[in-house]
Image 1: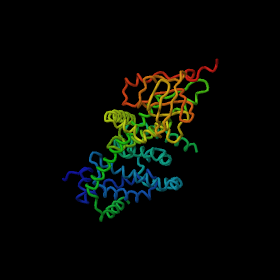
Image 2: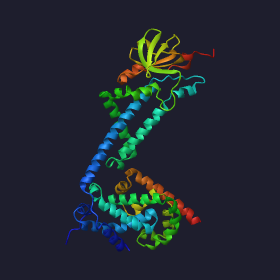
Image 3: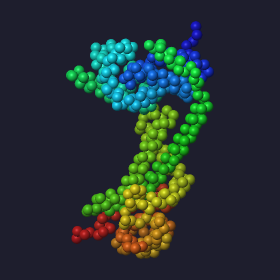
Image 4: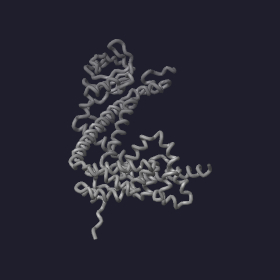
Length: 184
Length: 250
């Protein structure tokens, strides 16, 4: 049986053989799409953004620094693309967000399988989207993508020691939002 | 759905080629060189402005006393402080973009900046870069304008180099080349005026009339590379309002 190559090995080999990058695509396409959907709050657009992420990753694969985890590097590209999307669609996003959230995201069981396990899943999904993008992203990376603090630091380019307090603040905001939402 | 997405991605990159490693190596190298030059420039600029700020603050013509609260503020070099803060913020963002420094706490980066500026200060003092900068056109302009770049300098102040000196008159050339006769009287707060030498930079507060200025207070400004012991000797207690203007309450 063949040894399964690590992401980092595949990334380096992708320069020679495109097939290696295809394996990366198979491993990460759905994860990256989920992540983008959660950050941007738009499932339909997430597909196009994901394609753009992998296109950029492939073209710039030689710039990957092996000192980093490959997934962190890929998520960093996804983060940049998501932020660009949010900036471009800032005005229209908030209007679309609430309409899309229940319609699109809750249909995909994989996306919120953890949240769905909780009794107030839809409420949490909705309020999560009302958090500021940075807070939402940290919650997504830590709780849904299960990234370590170092990985989050590499993805968002923020100090490791400020991740804990940011998560704590984001959770408190989430609690308040849920409380307000359940009152109405 | 996801299968379709993966196929789409593979289709999209089918005819694409990754950029070569050389492309990124040269890009990274030029970026690093640029960052290094920028770092040197920022550290030297911060050291330079801090140096001038310290000069003005330690030699300031503070005039505290009744009704003089705002007067003392008018000597405060706000613009220099803003420039220094701006440069430190720039250095902070520069540090955050070097390697994996973004992982570090902001406080560690701030400590690194201070170490960097202090190191830069001592290095530039040692190689004479600081003195050259201070005596350059821009440095002289800053002194000439009493540390103000946008706000006009005080009308009752002259900053310049001593051309000749006697017991009660000093000839001072300001940075526009104008020669001022600085008239020293008994009531002038002069600190160590008697020991002032030709070539020394001084700061005079007084009443101007033509090319004469009747000095109320005179201070020496550093004209030599500074060290702690010299600074301690040079800087005395600030004069009080009464020492300069006399006690009008009597």
